[in-house]
Length: 164
Image 1 (tube, rainbow, N blue to C red):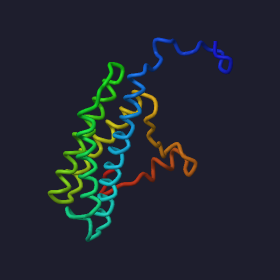
Image 2: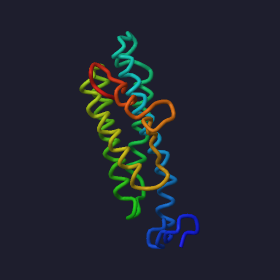
Image 3: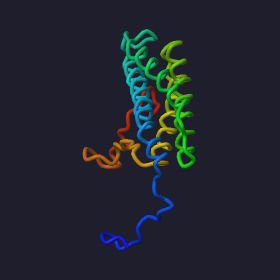
């Protein structure tokens, strides 16, 4: 029994083995890199929606995101994945592929829909990955101290009528 909650402790079969722990340590870097690429693309979309003249296919942020994505995509593909981490890894692979589509669209020209659709898919896949294993937190701003849930929903950031 857990002395703090009064419930039985987590069964030993659910404990994380050494291979899964090693995977978590390595995959965390790739997870964070994919989040970084997502954030850079989202930032570029905000610039484009605000009418910035610099928000184009040759913006340094896009070049930086593309380099980081390429390195990370290769690292995710080469990962040694234990059985317990397979679903997590599949979500990372899917997020990397969705980001590849968003980057291709952004390099062709900063049009909102062609970039936002795969970008949203990538973010959703990263959220799913974060739920599969411990150590992959996603920030939930609607739970933050700076706003009530209803106010957050009403004031969610929109770009050309599309929620980011």
